[in-house]
Amino acid sequence: MPRIATPPDAADTSLRQQVYASLREALTSGRFAPGQKVTFRYVAGVLGVSLTPVREAMRRLVAEGAFEMNPNRSVRVPLMTRDKVLELRDIRMELEGLAAAKAALAATRPQIAEIRRAAREILAARTRGDSATDRQKVREFHFAVYAAAAQPTLLRLIEGLWLQTGPYMNLLYPDFISSPRGPAGRQRLIDALQAGDAAAARREMENDIRRALSYVAGLADENGNIAPAIPATVRKRRSPSASDAIFELRVN
Amino acid sequence: MPRIATPPDAADTSLRQQVYASLREALTSGRFAPGQKVTFRYVAGVLGVSLTPVREAMRRLVAEGAFEMNPNRSVRVPLMTRDKVLELRDIRMELEGLAAAKAALAATRPQIAEIRRAAREILAARTRGDSATDRQKVREFHFAVYAAAAQPTLLRLIEGLWLQTGPYMNLLYPDFISSPRGPAGRQRLIDALQAGDAAAARREMENDIRRALSYVAGLADENGNIAPAIPATVRKRRSPSASDAIFELRVN
DNA sequence: GGCAAAATAATGTGATCACAAATCCCGAGG
DNA sequence: CCTCGGGATTTGTGATCACATTATTTTGCC
Image: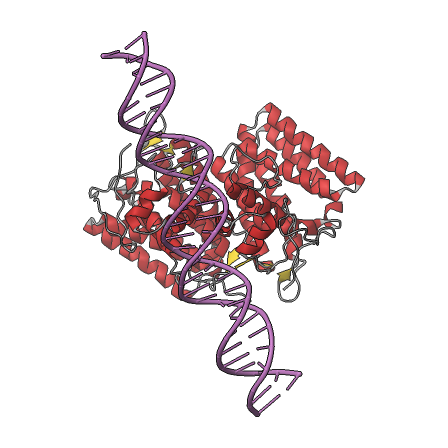
């Protein structure tokens, strides 16, 4: 019987992994402008490393769809469109619905407690109006459910999808999350997990994703483009420190 | 600057892309033994290139799950287990079922003709007992359907999943494919696509995948391991600077 | 002044090197 | 025979260099 709930490669101290983590963090927090060209040497300069680990990290992100490569072999941040959001919505409904169904059959009691805790912390952050913590806890809630499914390949796929939709989930604040249906749906999801009702868990997860991403799709302009919510603080640094990489937000 | 014999893939002529294609082909045709350690220098030597493109190609395959990386940073061909087959089965049912449903709504007349042609060629190869062509045409049939769905992200995900299950689909021959349910199911799928019946198309696709991968899961030994069907042919390595992608099948 | 061509800079790609960690090998000791 | 230790070898990692291609700027001509 193989161990399933294996933690991610946390022991990987390679520069490549650190660059990957830095870029991933910068992408999900929206510190790159959509369509922005990101060169290897720029990233290497900001992070103070050579091209080698940067190339490998960025190629992985290209493979995951977080970056895209032009035919003229330059790497860019993908533009988000209504069609792409709708495609990602349908894929995520399938996969995260499947994960919720599996979780209903496999979740242990401490795992359910962890999920419940995350749900409480979402509400706490939300009543405080702390949208940053809110978003973080929403992520923890979802991935606590997916971890309970104990399906490593499925988890990896879902992480890749979140990487693509990540910068745009800020758009749900503050309007969308004021709807009371979110908390109620999470409660019904927890109930379904506890009852082992796979169909109900899947339904609740699918509804949650459908509502959120349909809302984001509705924010597209007349050309179908969607701009991410840009954090107000855009800083510029030249520090060669890989641990706290801050990427300048350049406009083309 | 050595040339590598690769199928005409895309406009990307980089060595990295050629190495990627070679390794991918070797993996799907089962020329690597499960659990086999694959070193960068070995691949570089066989293909006659330096480490740089090999590293990038292999890292991409690791990201896609076609290779796996040990904590001691060596790259291996993943072992297939019953649990993993069942997980991949459920994921593929979701995603390829979704693609079939989308295809039912979006397929054009020439695309349906292409799908129908592939189905005919499967039957032709099967009556000849040509299992190699059979497998190739099954792949063409499926991906003709997925292409008709016109969902680029979904297509990329499905390709990644086929890369992981690929070496084990040989196990369906010759016993499993003798079942007459395959051709009948494909015909019903085509009918559903033509009628624009998304639910029926999804159902047929899901049934096809469920049957095939459940059969493969049933081939696991008492430890849950599944060995791929090894092609009887290739086992010989040519010169150290071979100009095409023939990988020796090493046993550890 | 406008614009195309040449010159220059920027950038991705692939090879090579140095180095540390992991692995392998082989013999001593039981 | 087997186990264990230590040196030799293998292997992944990161940096650096050379080069071709693409992008940008400057120049020269009308």
